[in-house]
Amino acid sequence: MNNNNPKIHIIGAGISGLIAAQTLEKNGFSSTILELTNSVGGRVKTDIIEGYQLDHGFQVLLTSYPAAKRFLDFKALELQEFLPGATIFNSGKSQTIGDPLRDLSLLFPTVFSSIIPLMDKIKILKLNLILKKKRIADIFAEKEISTLDYLKNFGFSEQTISQFFKPFFSGIFLETKLETSSRMFEFVYKMFGSGNAALPKAGIQAIPDQLAQNLKTTKILFNTKVSSVEDGEITLENGEVLESDFTIIATDAKHLISDLKQENVKWKSCFTLYFETEKRVLEKPIIGLLPKENSLINNIFYNTSLETSKNGGKELLCITVVDNQNLKGNELIEKVKIELKNYFNIDVLRLIKMYEIPKALPDLKNIKYSLDLAETQYSKQIYLAGDILVNGSLNAAMLSGESATLAVIENIKSNLKA
Image (cartoon, rainbow, N blue to C red; front, side, top):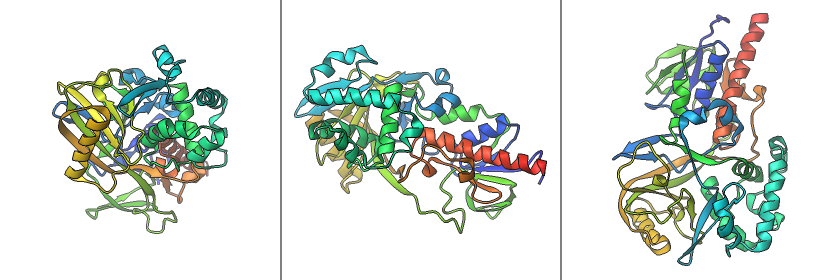
């Protein structure tokens, strides 16, 4: 091994892998990324279809993510911000609620909304203040309970939980029972309260694209499938063996390391459907929620309510289905159309595309904020990264990529001293 110029490989050009490569470059090292697909981004991707920008799933960037502030150039991304609230559709009517402290236009609709009882509005303000002051480290040191139990323990009424918290956070956590860790709820709620939800003007893939474009000495090999990893070598599917002094696996390592003592990652899935419509029922850039038991639709959003780089000419409506009730294909599409008409009075012109996303978010217990350097090291020469090791967020993906790389650099430096 040449400690001054070691051969470093990163498996996966998702957010974690790109951050790993960037961190190596900042510390004077180069690497080669081996990527299975033909583009960067991993689960963070955008397609251009018939002139429309279609993200793989309804994804947003929370501008208060600490890691995002460090690693991304928000100005260059031309972030388009959502209104800090939601419009709730129920019984043929809609009411908008939100944070009037961050957008004054939400003051009167929130104050006079009948969806949330007055006592719960006070509790929401109390929760905002508590989490604004609470340190992230303290959030992730708390005992884990389910988000649902957390909300009940805080004293929120069943009405507020079912009408707002369930539909809103089901769309974020991609599960309908709010079984997700209370740590994740507090973290995400804090991030929403201290920043904005936003999308790059060119779609969510502008984030990994920016990270990739900033790399100077990193080589990315696309359409390269890795079959196994051992200390010192990487075997590709075509039989080629690559020498590797250090390997950072920035993807699910279970199928790459034969004796990895790690449980199989469970995944949350969803369907995202994009429809073309003639007009919008939500004029402003705000999410629409459907708090109805046994409905397919969880939330709706008009991508064209934000400024986008590409526009197919009409309105683009994004639908998220968390619980597909065992429906797929045309049966799912037709039922979604019926719900759009019945609950939102929306007539669609046509379906642009439907995405079935079986691995949308890792389903994790005992979640952490980040990894200690030692936790990323699997063996002398193999290191692990990815949000699947921490928590399902863009922030976690970035931090884990950085931690694994700093552990590699620490190892290199200790070898130089030896």
